Image 1 (cartoon, rainbow, N blue to C red):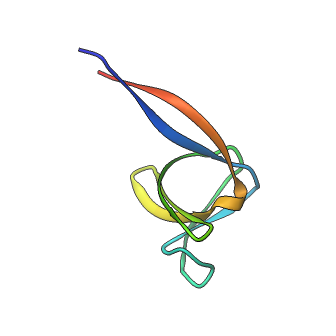
Image 2: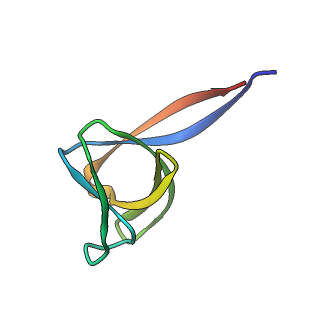
Length: 75
């Protein structure tokens, strides 16, 4: 059976966006994400958004992300 669901995806729109452990620049950087990286969005708070990237949870500033919705097909 194939189930189709919509996941909200955002795209990094600058080079080397800092992926952080918490929702501010005071938190440690997990890694830097290159431009055009796709991330799955989760809850948002005060200009920061919790995202999943390669099964790692972290925070990005929403200011540097572009909107995009993609359809994910699960089998």
